[in-house]
Length: 247
Length: 326
Image (cartoon, rainbow over all chains, first blue to last red; front, side):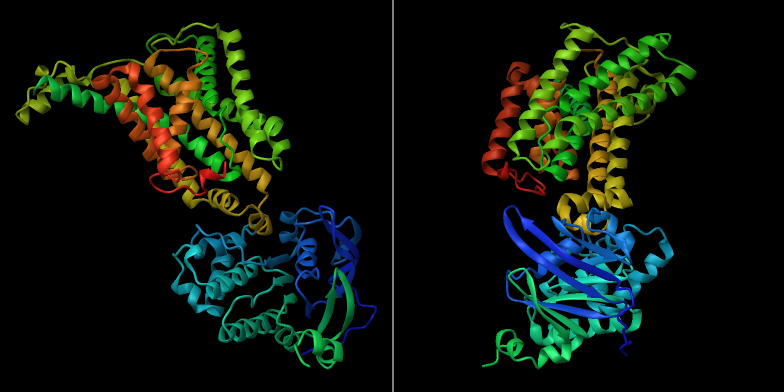
């Protein structure tokens, strides 16, 4: 079910012309994008195009030197990362970043660090176990002992524990076997449909990403070169050639 | 029982007491290292601060010596809490002023700063209390359980005449030291293992950026780590003062090096490792003092430190981070 968005509706996330740097490297050169409540939006692009930097800047791990980011109408681009979680933004970062010497359960509990409702947290842990039964089997194991796929499930589960309004997923399919990639994407769609969680999805696997997303932005060397509905992008000649690997 | 066996038993008791107070100091070393990878060379001097500040507090209160009645059951714990609060706050202040601005600097910068802070604190103690051996009044009542009628009759029922064991003594002070250090070590371990803040400390130690992404205010977590580490070192200084009844401005340096060795031995960054390492070092110190000669003890202990750093830098239980990165 896709809601019809009018242009006047306020986006949940409004990124306006942001410039981010790593030292002297000008990684984002004026990125703008909007995400509306309930959408899945994907960023596609080659390595180094600025996808992860965009996620890092939105989540407050990095701050833009120029430009603004508004979440739910409020400017957030100068907020420290730890304040954004209670605002409603959480993420499954690139490389998963599981706490290797905390148990699976404690990793999930850390996702709910900013929440105080103990009973609801326990219910949410069960809900994550429902989405990813493997995690339940491994509940007491250290995060570092999990396989790559299990760690990815844990990273997504951990991000869900914050009950985000906006979920940032950075390369959830990286390094996973094709069967697992399918599973992860099914769950991404479920989270979006069942909980109404808005999702910003960064992917190298452009085909999968465009299949689940409503809209997409194509990034090249720190700039948005194209944005459109996912269907349109999938039929766009340039996208097909460069990102979907067609001759 | 033969004299040799009695000496051995006595050495074990001494080893455990030394291990107990070293464990409290080593925990602070290992916690701070775990979270910001800083070998806080000033940490031992926090132990000395606990010694001196509790001495001053006692002098202000001026209780009857030895403590008895309400002084023993109320004033003593109150002084301990105040000492913990003050030493913890001092450590927190040192971090905010001296280390925090260097959080993103190369590691050598905060390390050298810590050495500088250590010199500074020792100079302050020398001016404050004098550069001499300072007596710590015998506030804690001392009674040897080996001379206690009930204990003697209990052992005689088991067929042992402990009045023959002239060399062994186990006093109220030994019990007091165990009674403070062991529960505190256990409480801290539980705190780190079970509580939300303890888990956040471990999460921040394992991946600082990921911890921020969870909403953890890592700066606040680091500050709490310094406070808790300082408080433990402070109470160790006080308890050690009550136990050994003397000290001097450099006492923190010596204790700090032994505690640091303990932390490395157990695996720096590893909480249980620090405790294990402290009791091993305590035992080695007691045995070396007695069988090799106390003038050799430092050689033995630092020899172990060097061997560990060369052959097993990750320690017995495994370090959380490799110390080679230093």
